[in-house]
Image 1 (tube, helix red, strand yellow):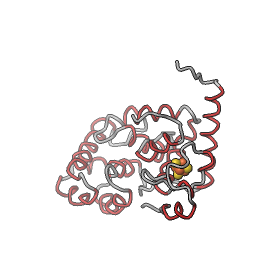
Image 2: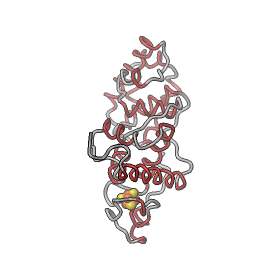
Image 3: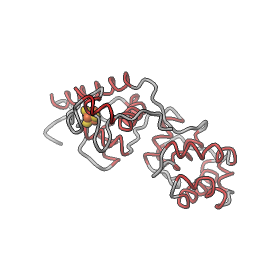
Length: 238
Ligand code: SF4
């Protein structure tokens, strides 16, 4: 047990400020959503696997063709490597991703009747699926709250002082404890959107940031509004 228990004043202040930041981000980004295009849990699972080391925009360029050709888990299980490799080539790491997609189709057919399971502990047993991918699918395809710790989420959670961890599982657990479960999925979207647009890894646009007055890391990037405004990237990123 740390000296700060869950009821200590500083813990209370941390929770209060964290929730305020979340509320402010909700006002700033009322329409946040995953920037990957999908219509079914399987499509989102595949798109999320493809998004590793890639951009949502690059994934959205290849998925229309992929999803038209491969509609079910059985289609992926029976796929020819070269065909998938050709379609997803531009997303990078296409050989490893192809292996994951074929293995995913086989695992879904063998163990889950061809359906994407809606439990974290099942999802993480699938090829190419870690907690991050599993939480994306749970939150966005099944409406089950999940925290998605990607590079943006991790950076912003540390800048907000919500965690000092670098391990994604520990970040997920520490940040999750600050918010009601019902907020987890939208909180993830908001942090990722803010990270992509304003709070960049290098040179965050502090002077143009809507949550600057609540952020303990204000000043990590330029605070001059003119300079900061030029650093803001407009979406969409898909
Ligand atoms: S004030 Fe700066 S560090 Fe804090 S969230 Fe805004 S851009 Fe990021």
